[in-house]
Image (cartoon, rainbow, N blue to C red; front, side, top):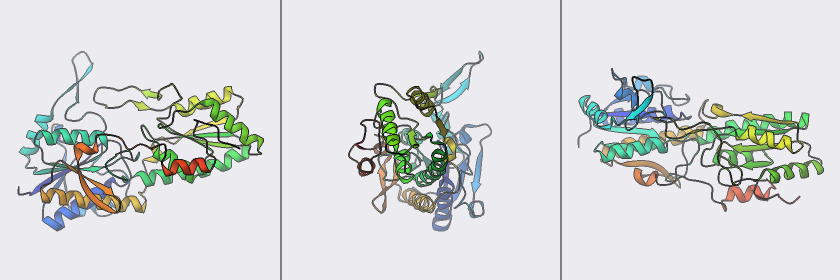
Length: 370
């Protein structure tokens, strides 16, 4: 298959390093193969819009992108070619399958291959489009670091640094006021950000989705700290963490065109539970989208660049239906279908967990020894 024109798009939530991938794709495609590169604005929505929102990407467009956060193409975690929202005459929303229309439009504008940058949702769409015959390769993107096929995703390190910096700042105010400070971080199904930032920031308690917690264990840990002379505590909780026997809290349920509910509220809920157990000076900080923004860390820029170059090489080799991934110190390719089989969650015997327990950190399942 002779390639002359490729399309690149960014889907799902934004993450530091997306622009670095776009830059690498354009530079490798233009300098290495003399291909034309275009981008679809707001994921596949740009192709499906009337008129189509397709932008040409040249070397001049990507100059200076390496250190820039966000994505110049925009992104979307709503809709998509298989669940495109359509408003009915009565005002309700239904979803329709426009995947065949998408492929026809791509053929019409002469697209020979697609580079899809995104997380599990975007890669599921990529796999389904590949099964329909679209030449497509994937680049993994999730700040949660929860794609099992790759050892790390870009954006994760920057998110951990942002969260660690916030915990550092909360330490001083918590100590000044003898308060319990709860920091709610991102982490829907996996607690990598909370666990990493919690340990790096010196948190006393870390609650993650992989370990259902008991509020009484958390409260007992805070009481033991106070008896030992530590009159403040820092509790880091992932948004997907939940109490034993319960479920993760949501602020908005799944909507047409949105694959997952929006999680949130566990920090405030936990704060109320601790106040009811005798800790009135409990405050909650929800870091939210601050974790997604800002200048990407050097490690994320490097990984994003390696992924972008490798994705173009996959296209050149005709290895469609594949996703680039980090294994050890190598960039490899894996079938997209394998990449979306399961989440990369924290094993109960993971070294980071054992490290935390060794430091006396409470994970809500037991009360650490004094």
